[in-house]
Length: 330
Image 1: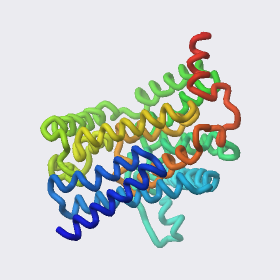
Image 2 (image 1 turned 90 degrees about the vertical axis):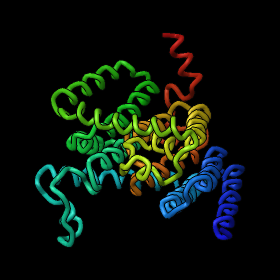
Image 3 (image 1 turned 180 degrees about the vertical axis):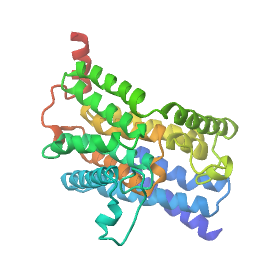
Image 4 (image 1 turned 60 degrees about the vertical axis):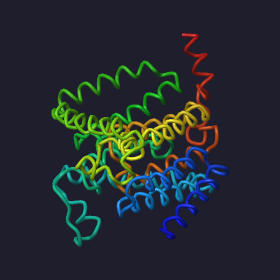
């Protein structure tokens, strides 16, 4: 009990520092992650979830405060490109694990890239596609898009489409959105024929998470989803936070989302919206690789201040005010 109390007080102190000097909503989330397990069952699962959150917050602070933006953007593109090349190799029946490890490792015959399954790969590529819109990475966009489509996982495609639609709006090319809609319809009808069956399975998980939120408005405790629902994850990290940390956890995440959506200019939504989409309908925070990528993206958004021009130069619609005035003019 003495150790638990000491650690809790230390984490609450860390959350106060993050609250005042980095991001108020992130600080509140850290404090909630430290306190909420005490009211339920503090076991190894709660401990691991708390430590994972602390590690993620530590990296968020590093990214948000240090001038590594360009290097980290390049690193994200390299990670996505290696996974894309691995998918293409798998499509031609070549084992990328054997290629990249010089025969020391062997992987699966499924189109998963260097990840464990198609959904993880899709989340990774979906949130990194917007970074390929800058020079010189834009030349690799066809490779990444092909890697998104081949595994037949829709999560990342929806995320990339959301960021792409914002980019088109920012550059006053919103009529191209119709082509995105037609391509999406063709993808569902001709390629991802299992989409409806997959959506039905996911909806079952979502209902389970919502039922837990109704019966436990303050959550079942961080790390305890699999004990309460007898499932590995909820296939929606946002709903799983609601089930584990209750309404307070969702309110903190909603506050973070609204704050950063309003604080930054419209171009930041090109990066921010894909992370929201994959967190809502996928489980990227459940996997260390995609969780680290998401934390890096959110830290980059915080680091870049209120201007998103460090990626795209000077946009036609640089701010929310420009966007509203543009709509009025239409």
